[in-house]
Amino acid sequence: MSGRLAAQIAFLNEADRLKQVLRATPLCDGSRSENSGEHSWHLALYALVLADQAIPGVSIDRVIRMLLIHDLVEIDVGDVPIHSANGTAHGSDATRAAEAVAADRIFGILPNDIGDDLRAIWEEFEAAETPDAVFAKSLDRVQPVLQNIESGGGSWIEYNVTLDQVEARVGTKVARGAPALWDHVRGRMQSFFGR
Image (tube, rainbow, N blue to C red; front, side, top):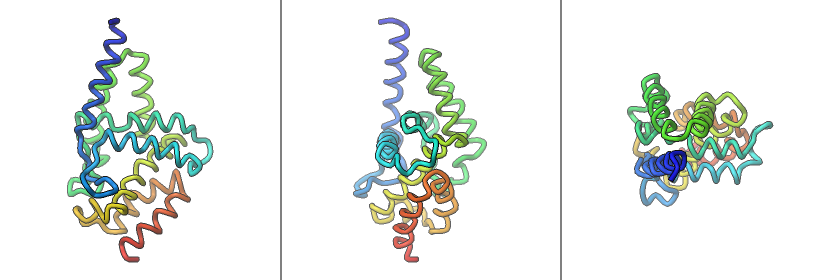
């Protein structure tokens, strides 16, 4: 096997570890927590199915690429739930620094041309400035909301989450990239919270 192919296989084997990272959000049926590998696959499917909800100028193929790799850094860093008591760590300087180190290691397994390309896509997702990244972030934020609604409250109950917290931490990001989707989900969410 060539060194290039060995590196590609090594990366794919390393990526399998994402399936071991448990998230706070339950599956829609509430039977168990989802893992980050399942989350990434589900988001790629969200992008494919909800492409018509994207803001203008979005390339769904690029969004799918982003969503398939966006959480690979959790192999090293773990998932920091946005509503947990440690939620302040979500997006903190310390978390971002740890994720950058993880990205160096994980994407560094690949041959440079592939690793550099995937690292650039991951950085674009994290910055959330391009239309593709804005839409990808919207989907990343809305999927747990829908799963919490479907599971009867899921992690919202566990973390005593309020409607105002969901609006502030999630709603603005979803509305930025998929306003009609957020309007729909917001209505379902408000009924859950009794407003």
